[in-house]
Length: 226
DNA sequence: TGAATGATTTACT
DNA sequence: GTAAATCATTCAA
Image (cartoon, rainbow, N blue to C red; front, side):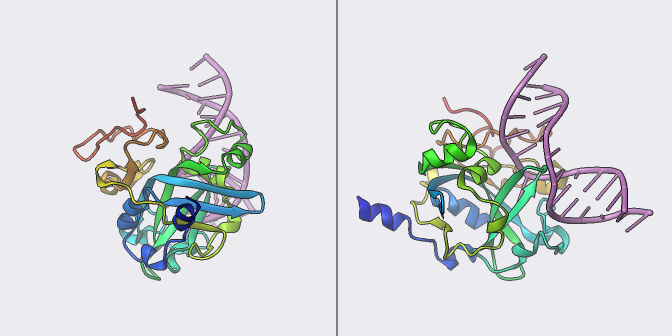
């Protein structure tokens, strides 16, 4: 039991991140997000992630090869953290994928709490059983204590990492267009939002108004289970 | 130097 | 369903 749990906490190797963002995003599901902080350890099972594929992807911060202080981490080696601040109050956490110089990343949008719920609840100002503890990209950052200080951190060694967990059974993998990127034209149509369709913790962010469900959409974004 | 805006969340009607 | 909160980053001038 203990042995099994420890093997699941093993950090994913660099090779895991040395692939396209789409491949990493899909393979992230079912894996564990682990953060060992001074306040305590939090663990979550990843149930939703989005791929951002570098300079050609109009929805990516690195679109057009834009390389600034903010996007610098995306251009760095795979397996590092790209953390950014949004709307004046929210942090979002990505894992950098692909080779050096290829500015791709995967945004973690939701996890299911596995351990450290009390700490998550304290950070979030909510009850430990609250379904809204970690069902959104900024919510999970707050629950896990992820912010500026983690920018560029190596996820293959250190307190913040993705861990083995257990890969998602293929029949539970669902896709949808990414959230909040209507401005990206045809790129907004790409089904690069991946989620566990059996998880009640998938984020409730509304889908882009102009996007309507297509064949690839196996469950409407934001819809509730049951 | 200044204005616009965003890979969101929350509270309220 | 709509709107407010709130500021780092970006780009234009």
